[in-house]
Image (tube, rainbow, N blue to C red; front, side):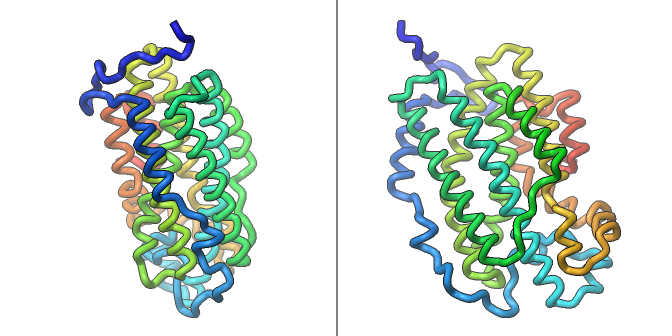
Length: 311
């Protein structure tokens, strides 16, 4: 028997129904990638100046929206904050995609390198390379500088990705992709937002849809076949990843950059019912899915609630 022989997943099912054939799904995703991949350098007008009065992120998604501090800010200051928050989210996206690329390489290391499943993983890594460079170019264009995650979380991620189980890697992948994807789906059709930012988010949404499908289906397979200890460890590591991710979602340095009091801004964001609803709405599709596959039970559920991404 080949060392790469995989079980017949079509004979298995979970709470969402029968599992899909791994190779057949990967082949379809590869075909979609050949037909619908984008070159940000060629497709976006990077030389066009930014338009006066346009946002860099929809105002309703800016962290301070509808807080007392927001109501006292000028329109110019609000737009400036959206510019810095867009750069901070792009910085967060690069950090997360670098982690994701490492996890994907580790996933395929012991698999048949001629399979469609591995071929799609390598295609996704190429996509993420382009996305990271695209986000970096957008940050440079905006002139704000980058916003690295706090050093403690940067180093904690080293540990999480080193001890992560295979299903844990895919659960964390979805965590990083789906909340930002929800926000970007609101951004790219919004005519109040700068055309370049809309273009960047459109490309990312189109290509991330394939990444999410790949990760969801693989996580389902892994959770059905994993031993109990691995499923429980995955649930805990995913819950801790949610806590770290949510704490990194707003970089307090953006408030300093636009002349706001950092402590007051952070306190108002934490107290904001609107912001809480935005984050939970962004995570709902994901948390419903994770609940279905058994990753929101016991202590893991408490971690998710403490992250603010689950009611």
